[in-house]
Length: 278
Ligand code: PDD
Image 1 (cartoon, rainbow, N blue to C red):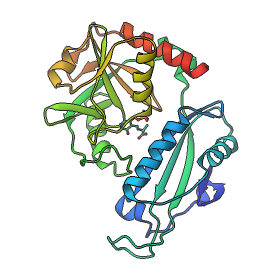
Image 2: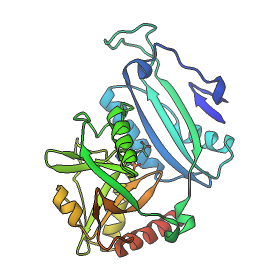
Image 3: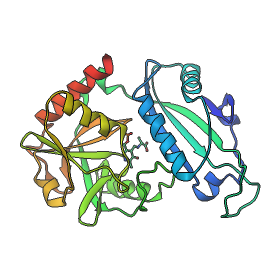
Image 4: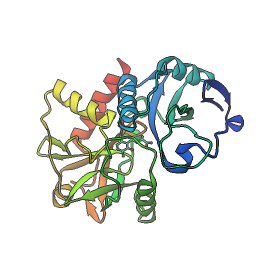
């Protein structure tokens, strides 16, 4: 495995970061996960825009040619279907201090791992999943893609222990998003998802679902969704870069719709497939 660290492409086991790096000490860092299919970044511009948004929110100033570094990393790792993990930390001041020193050099790290290209495999190869709903323990700036993922990891483990693959998060009586995904419900042919804001990450896959709906005349609306509405929905989906759009067949002990992958999900999956191949 070849990784990128601070200007160099090196073997993963040669890549080391200072123990005083603020990413390590404080989680003072942001990240992106970007799928590449046949060496082409999927929604690359949207990911890079969001990276810039996260960096700005942390007031990390950085100019960098992301596209050329990412394509070199992908090709050095053999191309194919890969997800690229990209992390930028505020860097190291050579000591531990909460105070942000000026003039720090950000740490830039990127690595790849193989992912499934479900849009080549087809809708039949996608398995519906089970999710749990549980309290959203995260902070109030979930719009920043920060690496502080302890609450996300803990609820995912809770899901796993309940035989589920994801956790949807409840805050103030409504669902925000998943531990590492956004979510949608379908009611009588209309797609609903929680509105953009500081309570959720503005997912690039979420954005694409909304755009595809608009382009193809499928009604959709951004609105708050309660637990009662979730479990009574005709369909529930989750979305993320690495998983695409995935049908949810069960929430806690409640079966969703008829317990099978929904008709509108299949349509959306086909729209994604066409979009990805164009
Ligand atoms: N997670 N919400 C959260 C909390 C996420 O962590 C993610 C993505 C999303 C979906 O965003 P997008 O569609 O742009 O991938 C929503 C990535 C994949 C991860 O942490 O691995």
